[in-house]
Each structure stands twice: as C-alpha cells, then as structure tokens.
Image: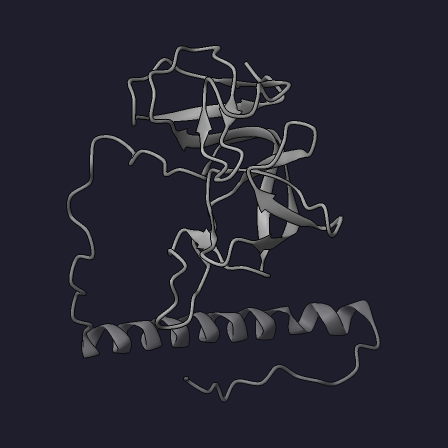
Length: 208
C-alpha cells in the first residue's frame, strides 16, 4: 500500500472563516489520495497476472434430468425428518415409508396406507463408512432421513403410467407403482404419462 504524507490541518474550527480557509487543503488531500491509488493500480498491472485456464467452455443445451428422490419443484412442499428403523441394508430414495409400530418418530419401508407418512428424499450429502453395504443414494439404519409429505418428487416405476394414475407401493420395499401392492395413497397421483422404467414425478397433495 502507498502511504501518504499529506495531512489535513487538525486545528479546531473556531469560525466559518476557519472552515472555509481549509477547503483547499481537504481538496488537495483527496486529490493526492486518488493519485496515489491510481499509481498503486498501475504498479500492480506492470507486475502482470497470467490468465487462468478456462474451467468450462462448452455447455449442454438442456438441463440434466432429475434423479429418483429429488424434489421436482419447490412449490408448496413439505419435508419432515424421521429415524430409519430399518432395514439394515439401508432405505433408498423415492420409496414409500410408513410410521413405525415401535416408535412414533421412526419410519419403515413400505407399510400400510393407514400408516403411510411420505416418500424418501434423495440426500447427496449422505456418507457411508468404507465397506458399507448401504447404497450411496440410501439412508443407513438408525440415521435421520428426509421424507416428503407434500409436493412433487421424481420417481421411477417398472410399469407404464398414465398422467393421473393413482400411486401404490410395495408393502415390504416401498417401491412406487400405479397398481397392486398397497394403495392407492390418498391425494397422490403420477404427473406424467411414461413408459415402464422411465423417470416420472409423483405428486403428493394433488398439485396441478
């Protein structure tokens, strides 16, 4: 940094005439400050800075599609936290879960329509120990998990779906579908018409 030797008169102001007499001094001090700053900038430019490598020069024409368990849009949605009671192999994202019969704050895969509490949300921050059998997109047993109780969430079903189809799920694995198993879930529907094994969206709370 450039240090200035210019110093404005610090004598007390006893009258308007004293203040008027010091205006040129203040103006000169500000001018010196600007000149010094410009000199410092020029000096830095003389040193030169090498341009950095381009991080990304090409961009896709379309956004990447969602993943099962991702929230589709943040419009009138609600997510709660519950503890994963089981299974030991982990609780995957985009699965229906129900309240535990043992503990009010716990949840289990699948379950019943009566005890249904929501659909598991994908959490990319999950970290599992080396050697863990829990998939990266799943919640480990006894950890907290996010559960969508209202809103839109990406999911995949193994059967053909038609927009407006009801939402059912497997009693043991919580896999979402549009027929059979446990269901229909009250206030839930498949948003789009899709072939089997294609990414779709489940609406909880019937948001159109």
